[in-house]
Amino acid sequence: MTHYWAHGREDINATYVELASRVEERLGNDVAEIGPDRQWWHRANTPAQASAMTEVALAVFREHPLQYLLTLPVGVYRIFFEVKIEMQGDNDWGAPWWVGFAWNSALLALAGNGCWYLARSRKWAEAALLLLPCAYFVLGTLLVQTSGIDTRARVMITPLLAVMAAYGALHLLNRRRAKSASPSRPADS
Image (cartoon, rainbow, N blue to C red; front, side, top):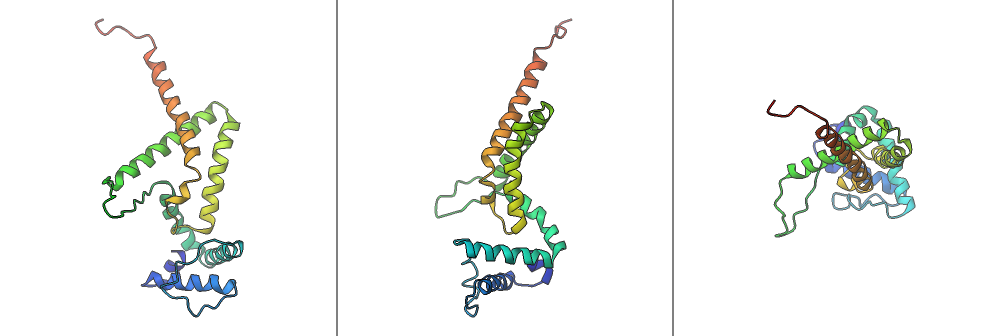
């Protein structure tokens, strides 16, 4: 998307073909047959292919730093909030998009509360063990891809977010219990 926005093209497929050609060229392959039908063939199946794809991505970001920065929020949204439901035949489970968005928002809010609780409790080791892998995967992904990310980028951090959310939920429950246990005036006085 960064390259597409920077060049103001009408058709994004032309951008995909150009980037696929760059990857193939770095691999030493013939680029004559790269067209709209072969633009999606690039997967990081080998170390050489992964390296070529990363080099092309970083080159695009160096060529167009402003567009790269402008596409970061799109990538963050797609990692943390977007829900893609693949519809195949009659397997549509019927939930609207906002159900997944609400679930992911609640998970992130509870995870944020859990992090806040860990920081306030000075449980630095627990906070670091949860936050550092999340930062590694999210920042590492955003370094080489922004708007082309899909929800699979969240898979590695979802268990960590769930643990942080559990800390956050327990913190909220303990606060509620502490308030209800406090002495107060009887209701009829």
